[in-house]
Length: 65
Image: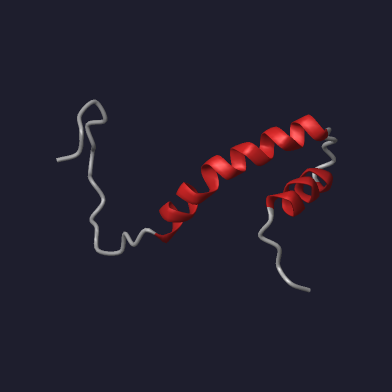
């Protein structure tokens, strides 16, 4: 069985596995959000952070130095 990458396949299947019923409007909204956010999520997952040191006690009120 080939893995699916289509949101039209895995969104309804995931909802059904959780016992959540969604109508066509719900699925359309979830599909639109998926199209909007999935590419940036994949870019973040592909980001190589191996050589970076974590910032200790960051001051979140300022931009990173």
